[in-house]
Length: 159
Image (tube, rainbow, N blue to C red; front, side, top):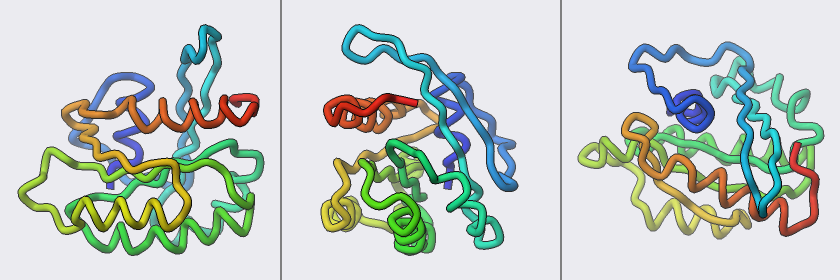
């Protein structure tokens, strides 16, 4: 679905067509400026396969925000979001979140309509929905900026 590619594009401005599935968890870091102050942002990329779901509660504790990513060309990745949201809410309660539909570069193969994703994000109390292309670098910064702005607005320390 492109979680790792999105995180890598955001933190390193690189993209690999040979990206493998995340086995367990990967970490990414980037310094960002928010409101004139510099912060180090840590991104925890959790493996999306069912066999890694048991790891999620261990790594979700203490998060300040979540970006949920699905592949707009694969409806099953969108359907699976419900279980990940349930796991997150059971672990940390409500935290600001953004929904990302990735692979906008494959628009002609779209299986999840934009309006369906927007309604899903609203229904789950997310702060927004963004469509991205990690491959082409389209809108990659936007979900992170939205999430960081909301965290700062809430007065939370960005970790």
